[in-house]
Length: 259
Image (cartoon, rainbow, N blue to C red; front, side):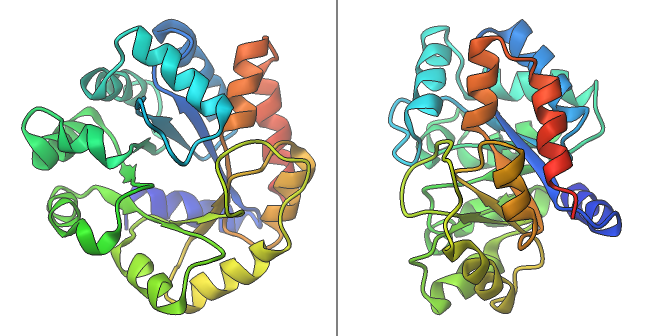
């Protein structure tokens, strides 16, 4: 059992959904990123660390702006993995890198080197928002050999056949996108979420985490009623950008994950 699986099982045993936080690597700077990450991890079960990319097609303006700022500071794949290594020495909770495929493809040494370096740094998984599983066999194979979980995405538009393909390629959890759109905090969560989670479980998904749109305790609670995990990204980055106590905000989100 992987560390990510164990985290979901621990949350399930406490009758709650796992809280999965997201922060962009190196934003707004390395020190404040690390401080924010540790504050979030006091309440979250795991953390996604976004690898900054110049063309993040699945991200809304909040994540895009944080990525642009990190890129301007020179945060690349190597630096992102270095930051994972720093965090891994200060927490036992699972750390995942969320990356578009281009930075992995262009990483010195390619996919195998990326996977090896991430595992060596203490990473538990990689989330691949734009890589179709049927086109990522080499990366998935390298990750399996190294013991790195691979997380792929499903959406309300995914066919049953696609759901089976994604769940077969995913380890740790399946990332269910709550809307047909980009990341970003929203006032409510789509009514399609429950059906998508049910369909993903029926296709073989053991842990299904829902993201895109969770903005506060109330929306977290809505997702927690139907899913195994609640992913929060844009709202956390906004808190970090505006000086909100991000640890207290994460605590509120975690309270919404209790059933």
